Image 1 (cartoon, rainbow, N blue to C red):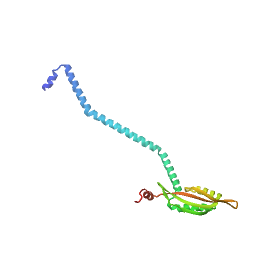
Image 2 (cartoon, rainbow, N blue to C red):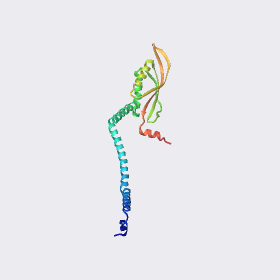
Image 3 (cartoon, rainbow, N blue to C red):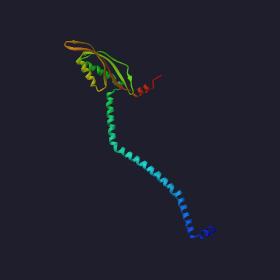
Image 4 (cartoon, helix red, strand yellow):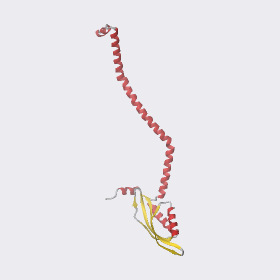
Length: 200
């Protein structure tokens, strides 16, 4: 038998118990350090990952539950965009819009003395299309013309209105009106790109 083991066996019982307890504690500590502690760290990491995944699931569930509402909002925005597109013509529609404005004036009983389109003024995604207009006719005809322009499906602003040469002809108040009519059109992608990168 090993002399060390014989020496331990000859020790008093209290010392044998103390050695046994120390060995057990050392063994428990080593098992805890090398076996249990890595598993505790792994479990903590897995719990953190589980919390993160649960949060993602909750967020996606909330989005899925709101999907009909979000779809309705998307459809509404598409309808509003389609409406906006009808109010802002593209460059091909500008001549017909200007022709419509002159037709409205003639239908209202006005004589066009000047109808002069000016240089467009590009903005972010649209361009202002100004037109100098000088017409003559009765107050009633001018009012009808402005009302008809306001009712166009396209946006047309009338500004800088000046009345002159006011006179009575056959019991009707006749006048000459100078104004600036401004309509708008969408810029296409190439025009926006060219506007942002002016040639040197």
